[in-house]
Amino acid sequence: MNEIINQIIQIDDDSYKNQEKKKSELLEIKQAYEEAINIYKKEKLYEAKQSARSITEKMDSLIKSEEEKQSIAVGKISEEIDEIYKNTENMLIEKLLDELFVMED
Image (cartoon, rainbow, N blue to C red; front, side):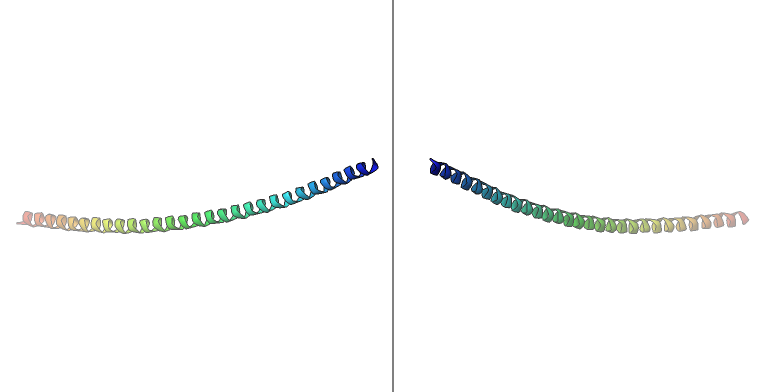
């Protein structure tokens, strides 16, 4: 009977050791997966930041380009307005001078 009890105790002890070993193995696997997931998250976050930075740089470049185009367009319009003003001013001066000379005669 003692021998049977000893065998049961041995089986129970072996079973407990095996269970603890499996728990330890599962914990190692879990930690490996968690680490892999964290690395993956960090990589994807880095890629997203790089992508956002690239998009921001492209948008900044497009905005700057558009601002330059608008500035050139405004400059051209301003030059045209100046030219029209000068022409109108010259025409008015000529007209006034003509009227003054006509009045003198």
